Figure 1 (spheres, helix red, strand yellow):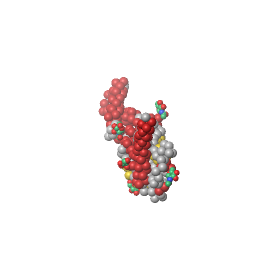
Figure 2 (spheres, protein in one colour):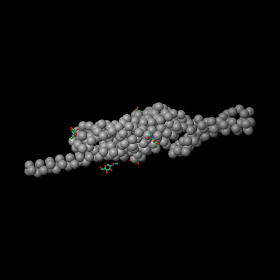
Figure 3 (cartoon, protein in one colour):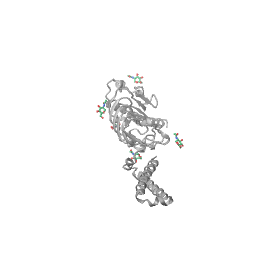
Figure 4 (tube, helix red, strand yellow):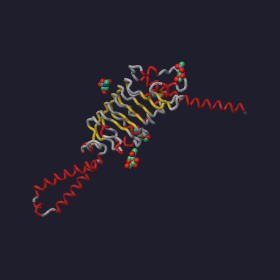
Length: 280
Ligand SMILES: *[C@@H]1O[C@H](CO)[C@@H](O)[C@H](O)[C@H]1NC(C)=O
Ligand SMILES: *[C@@H]1O[C@H](CO)[C@@H](O)[C@H](O)[C@H]1NC(C)=O
Ligand SMILES: *[C@@H]1O[C@H](CO)[C@@H](O)[C@H](O)[C@H]1NC(C)=O
Ligand SMILES: *[C@@H]1O[C@H](CO)[C@@H](O)[C@H](O)[C@H]1NC(C)=O
Ligand SMILES: *[C@@H]1O[C@H](CO)[C@@H](O)[C@H](O)[C@H]1NC(C)=O
């Protein structure tokens, strides 16, 4: 009886230690691949010594925070301002409990992985600012549901900002200043981002910046809405025009030819005003 009890205790303990070491082995492997993926000219990561199997040893590494100091489970990685070169570290997906990643102020280049939401599922703070990242802002960032802080300023990012980022209901800080971005900015509720967050990009538009040209809107996926807005504008113009026509004095109605041009102009003007009003 006592033996059976002890035996089941041993089995239970070994099961829990297997699952624990599986999770923490992933995190160790994660940091190993990150270290390997960076060119580290100043040797900051040389202190990451993996020849020590004490539980929690990675928690003492420079730039690494753990959930508990005696458990190899990484909470944050902060490798700012270390002169690191290389690409976005793909091995980060094996730090499965990571909530914060700060790689700012380095010389990292190449794209931000398109499937970043799978790699950083629980990330609340992502700071890739002041690097040399290029390519587009991945649409999948809109699936990083827990994001509070997204800092991408001072890079070489191109293309449009995914408008789906408005889904990020917890986002407080969003900055994409000093990139090469174009097109409309996401309509964040409660103006999460001020104009400063968009400064020095060649072609961004929409509140809080200048409103977008109507033509540009039409060619995008929101074209139906823009077309409807323009349509409503034209309709309003026609109604206003007819009303003006019927309520205007007889004398004016007689002058058909000069008035024709004037109506056309006023319809064009009204359409422009209405369309840009509805865009906001
Ligand atoms: C291993 O790491 C632990 C915790 O950081 C430390 O106390 C210990 O001295 C290290 N052992 C060796 C051999 O480096
Ligand atoms: C994550 O870890 C698994 C094994 O633990 C490995 O096969 C995989 O390649 C790792 N992912 C990356 C991107 O390094
Ligand atoms: C930044 O990336 C571009 C290519 O996108 C490259 O030509 C340039 O040399 C890089 N700058 C630095 C400082 O590495
Ligand atoms: C976001 O998540 C949804 C639901 O899991 C999925 O269908 C969609 O493909 C994801 N989008 C991206 C860009 O990863
Ligand atoms: C955003 O605005 C909505 C409605 O105006 C409000 O209910 C919500 O609390 C605001 N959120 C924040 C974070 O200010």
